[in-house]
Structures are given as C-alpha cells and as structure tokens.
Length: 262
Image (tube, rainbow, N blue to C red; front, side, top):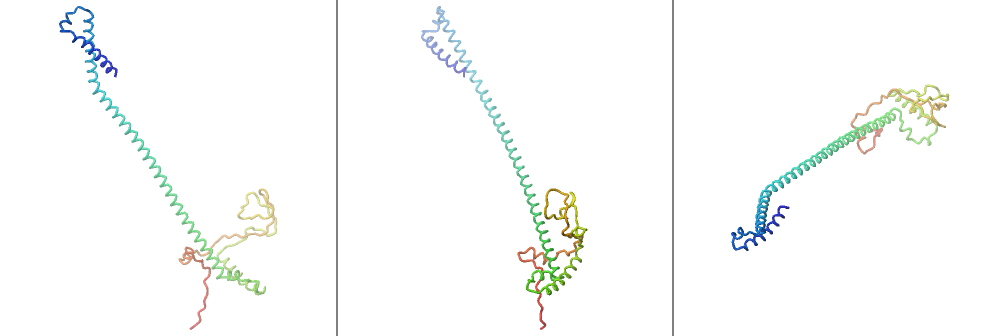
C-alpha cells in the first residue's frame, strides 16, 4: 500500500516536471542549459522515473506472491476447519456410542426385571396353588371347610361337638401325615422365661408392656408351633395351573353329584 502511495505521488510530480521539460523547445536546450536548477529538475525527474518503475515491478512481483499467500492461508483455513469438523464428528460418534451403551444397559435391565417379574408371578401362582391344595386336603380329610362355613349357632352344642370330633380327627391325621409339628418353646405354658439379647423375633412374639431393649423377662402364654418337615404334594397338574393363570376362582373342592341308577 505504501508503494502504491509513493508511486502515485511520484507520478504526479513527474507529470509536472515532464510538463516543464516539454515546455523547452528541444532537449538540447535542456542539456545546454547552464542553470543548476534545470539540472536538478532533470535529476529529480530521473529519480522519480526510477521510483515509479521500481514500484511497478514490486507490485507485479508481489501480486503472485500475495495470491499464493492468500491461497496458502485459504488452504490452512480449510485444513483447520476440516480438522475441527473431524474433531466434532469424533465427539458426536463418541456421544452416540455412549447413548447406545446406555440403551443396551437399560434394555438388559428391563429384560432382567421382566424375567424376574415373570419368575415372581410364577412363584406366587405356585404358592397360591399349594395353599388351595392344602385347603382341598383339609376339606377332603376332615370336612374342614364345611365345618368353618357352617353356622354352628343354630345347632345344639352336642351336635357341634360331635361334628368337631370328626373334623379334628381328619385334620389331625392330615397334619401328622404331611408335617412334623412340635412346640416352638420346649417348656410349659405359664412358666417364667428370660429372652436374651440374641433371641430370634421370629421364634418369640412379644405382647404386653414391651419397652426398651432385651433381655426381657416374661411369662409363656403359648408355646407356639414349628414344623421340621413339609411333605405336601406339589402342584404340577395343568388344571391347577389353569385355575391360577385364569381370572376364574380357584377350586378347593368340586361339587359332588350322586347319579341315580337308571
């Protein structure tokens, strides 16, 4: 830019001096002149001519270099933009991979919860089926459901006692057949007992005025029961499973119909 300004100024001054030069009738008069000012003017014109020519050559040489520099700068900018874009794409890919991993983990957890839920429902159905089966056996052996569902208040005590004896015998035989039941507390009811700090709350239920922490001193009201064996038949029939998996009621004992001889 400075070169162009100098060239423009030099060109203007040179045009002025050229005008002064051409105002002479001939060049010989210029060289024949003995006035020092005229020679100084000529030297100034020559210097300005040199400066203008040098400035033009400088501009002409600098144009390709400037173009090359601009191209190099553009290439550098493009390369930098490409590297930046590549880094952004790499980050996007990394984030996508993380999201895929998270989705896969969530999917596996959902599958595990689904399988656990199915197993829990299946186990619950089996337990329900076995409870229904126990009621069915109590009904079969001792007419337990019949006795409990009957309104005994309308019957005399003697009749209720007679029926209770039959129910007791049947249900007692069932318990002895499929369970091994014994008292939880090996002592007697009414005796004093001390429960230490290590007592099992599942084995002893505290009632009455319970305050603070063990040991506790109390009286045995009931010895409790515990079984060492459960030998009930397992429910594996499709009929029982169907009762549990459907919305219908679970059958404890079917209705009995006596068919008359034809």
